[in-house]
Image (cartoon, rainbow, N blue to C red; front, side, top):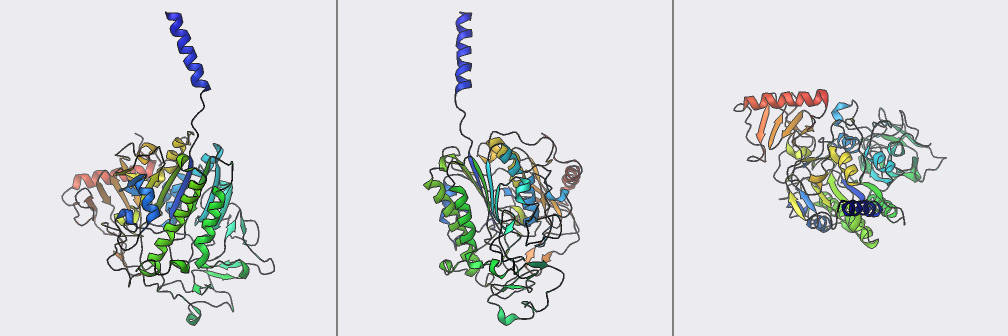
Length: 503
């Protein structure tokens, strides 16, 4: 009897050892720019329709309490790739277009973890994490860059659409550059004889509302100054088509699985200049039409995966880098044509803000046949993507560093309805979420950004909100809950000093 049991168990072990491992999923991360919690029809928007994103949401998990780590783009992207809160590293604020790369090539990253685990890795679209080691020579091979942190292929918008240089960079080199017309970029002073929006408003097809009055490219003045590179300069109306075609080409490479694609869109960041075929797609002018264009980009990615029969083995994640902003520097009728649309939905604040509208963003996770359609209230953060994606891919995540990211793969796949116990939100001040409680540290900054008309959530007194009863953060309970305020401030200080508290 014992011999039969031994033989049976031995045979079972051999069969288990010989059984093929399930294929590791491809991972496609769709990272939008400035999309707010209320900007998609699957999150309640009525004025604009997003059918492709709605399709993703119907077939996957739609999160109602998902967060970036910061209320602006550069620190959010830093945390996304490194699993580390950006406030831990100096120089991770919103970068100029000529900044050096802020991710140290020696530190653990999401793309490097996947690449070392056998994934083909690609980054297409907005970067805004800096390039090179200092003053960039845009006419030579630019290093370090995406390759040094784990991306085998890259096609980049170096910073943002409203910042110079207004060129694409593919695998470290400016696309279409004429060596007889070298590029120069600087942010301290204009180049002589180069027109600026401030001095030549008659040359502009879209005028600035505040700032954005420097070098003119494609009839739009930008932040920063640029000279040369005429043949390499982008045309804003074609940008979504160009980067989507590059993303599709990456996905269509045969026999190259598993893969990880990071696709960072320009939409709906300013300047909002969607392709003419999206004109009048909404009643909200360029901002609404840019949302429609973003949804089209997502649809092209989905159609490519479907055509290649890859949907069943591809984890698709859609989210945004921070909350929304309406007037962010150009006269594009975003305010005038907003109508009844609420970019933050029921939330207060927006981009740049300490309130929930700054970091609470749409998050949709879809993996056909593996993720059950659901709406999840789990508290999740993009700082967890490194460890979570590694777990989904069956790979070992980095050890003690990065300090902040957790493995929240069960929550992201809809299997854990709770998610994180706490997270830090970064804006002008810092906030701590612990369950449904939200503590905003006292700060002396302005209460309203007068340029963007955004409530910033700064206050010289502490703020405490019970989001389970007050999602709009209208009732400050700090005076009545002093013990909780003290405890949450102490916890925030402990996180800042020592990293995440291990479970």
